[in-house]
Length: 208
Image 1 (cartoon, rainbow, N blue to C red):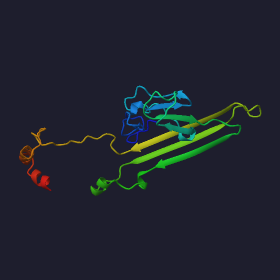
Image 2 (cartoon, rainbow, N blue to C red; image 1 turned 60 degrees about the vertical axis):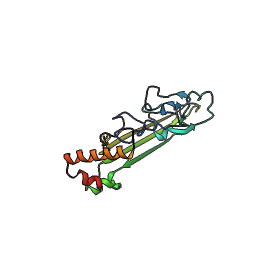
Image 3 (cartoon, one colour; image 1 turned 90 degrees about the vertical axis):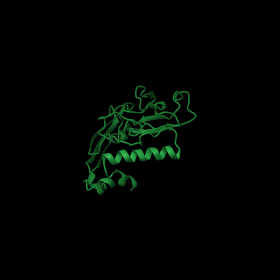
Image 4 (cartoon, rainbow, N blue to C red; image 1 turned 120 degrees about the horizontal axis):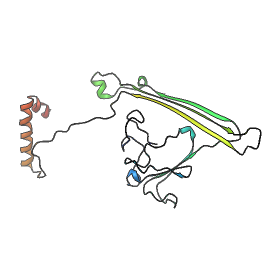
């Protein structure tokens, strides 16, 4: 939950475009609810959504994921959007464990189209996830009614892509809500005239 795909995890606040905060049934992301093992865990203080940046559970520690979008019961009916319920794994009467390693590297990726056209090398994009789990009886050899399970995940992320970017948009000077052929032509001519004063190539680039 709260996965940020644009920058190093935890380095910036999540938002609707970068985090797992979907809009369900047309409701705002803040209308989503989350329960973990039956305990309410919705983030009520996150303006980006009720699922964002407050809990991290390794995938190997999950036993069941349930998403309910309609006909919610009384236990889940507070939120009008999606209701997500996570059930974690539990130990058994036998010792078990697992380990996994997942990685990404820019060597295995194609360069982005515009970077490639400009002759710019691929930015760094490296991710390393290591997960270890272990579980079993808490008191081997005795009545095995008490068990344990634990999971640890370590994540390393390095990206050369910009986490934030600003784009400037130019609008014709004098363009108002009156959009007739005459007003649009007058605004376009004025825009071209002032642009030519700043840069003689403006009109040529505009026409191309």
